[in-house]
Image 1: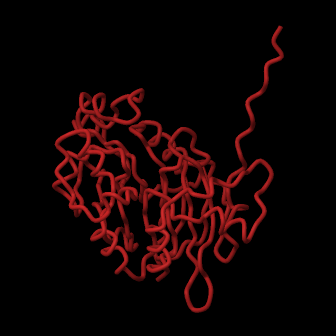
Image 2 (image 1 turned 90 degrees about the vertical axis):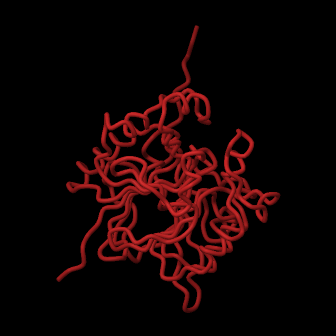
Length: 302
């Protein structure tokens, strides 16, 4: 019997925009001619259960408080969505569930750090970003804006948990591993219209995790731009393909889909057109990115 085929969609920082993400996934399913089986979000989801909480605490206050409709049962997510925490979340609601919880039907918080088997895939994850001052400090209950902000930083024991993982199909992190632009520049010239990100983007802790765990794929967000690069692949260690996702403003760079045959990705693509941009055995890097958006036309004026 052939291994089960799965269509998995990675989504960048949602920042409360649940309605548009669902519409994008509907379009992707139609374009691929099959259901989206699983959605993985890389943090800054901002799943505030109450509209008032969203308005008082969210980072993107101009966005509507859409998750409250799912929490109240007014709407139901059409396919299972699993997310890690970024540095902008409803940490008061998430604090007592460090190993994960269901927030609404088909909406699952994975937890602060660990491994979950989902539809036969081994998914490792680390929530939050790196803040050296708080790395060794205990996590406090988020009772104020200050302690809520601190809850968005990962801690040393959580990193140790992830560092012990092996045989990982997908690793979800919020903040980029440090050094991706340098690694890309060593191998490739950016295509026309593409520029490399800032040299200092990302953090060294996540980079060491990737080099220790050797996941097959890494999905990350936080920096609000798309990027693609391969790490490792020397000697007996398999390569790790990294896909960084933009925030959910336009689908071309904030949605990244992967079709799995068993536990191996056989094809992948950006956006919701269904167009394949990578197939098994092909190189993964800057050339795998979607075409950059067309510049806005300049008005002639009078």
